[in-house]
Image (tube, rainbow, N blue to C red; front, side, top):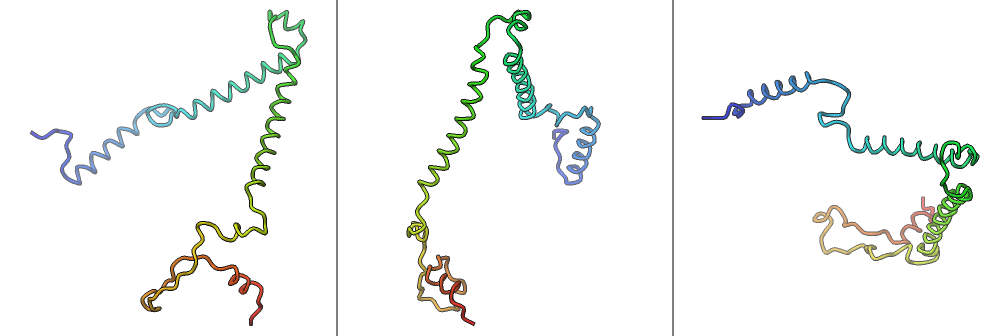
Length: 159
């Protein structure tokens, strides 16, 4: 005997899909994305933003409140106030040095403007001369335009 869920005609497929869509629309709409809850990226973003706010608040309390107030809260062990200034300075200097290092590597890896490596490389293709006639080969194969042809087109004002 055939299964009651099996579908054999296009009309039945259409009616089954309409019933399924109507049943899904009747579900509770609490704003959750899909039926599986929030996406993991949404949760990680929320937890990350809350953690950042809490860490910033703790840092500012530690950096700016006097020691007597921290002792009255029962906090006796904390890092030296030197690190309240030193860590941000070290981070900013590290970022600046990384940017300068990156720019320097780009300058070192770029060929000079007089080098032929900026005109020709291992992927350059010379125009091929084929034995086919124009009718047999209506589109020329892909090739690079020579620098002499580019100079001729750009700088010779032929009218």
